[in-house]
Length: 370
Image (cartoon, rainbow, N blue to C red; front, side):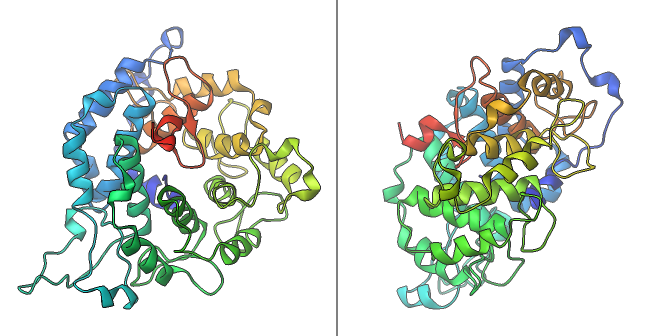
């Protein structure tokens, strides 16, 4: 996701080279073909730096497939092979009664978390994860697979097991942290499957509202510091669940369930002197927040208040001559920041880049199933 800020930041593992790898300022432009080449290389074989992220292979695949779709280059992948691989990662109960056992039957993040069945064909360890399930369904929509062919009852009935009494979600039934990332995953899953039976929207809404801080932003949990990724998860979830309108800034603010002016003000303050966007006050600019903050403002109707020329200039300092984007200027590219760099250029309406459905984190065409 659609995706999980705290986990995804670990994707920037490759060591940082000297700033000499960055192209000279006079040569900086959005190099679509190099980005396509970079993602195509990642599709064929991930570099060894990503070994520690093997358990998140489905998320990495989402970055590649969705990135190529943004660049209008899905012809570079074998769509049938992608779908076959994604569908093979869904967890399934041995009997229908197990649907109510407390386990979650979504998608595993990789083959390494998908333990083999025992001699009776029973799954002895189910490691399916909400974030992996979001990524799996997003890939299916991007490729054009009919989601009605997926057994959504398995996903949605068992997803209820993950929602907590306070409205938040655990990502996996064996227990883990509960925060806004996984409410977003649950909302996006429900939206894509066109079925909200797997979550209590009212409880989820109340939890989200409790996460808005005094400064207007949202923390991952109630009373925590406002954060760009958490703020996106909150606003996108509310939009997907139908609790706020699109472009809410231009409607009667008194009808909004969140403090929109304060949130827009907090978001705009994240653009700093170098033109980039930061995730929190007193932090450096980071490529990925051009999406997390930018998409939040797009949903609210305040994106045009961003100084787009300065943001574009910052992003180009993070563009690698090898294709892809780095977290900071002068570093090697990584898949996570490369993807969110591309989504940022989509928000900037770069020529040749497909427009986004910012709430789902995929292109508009994919979100509509066209």
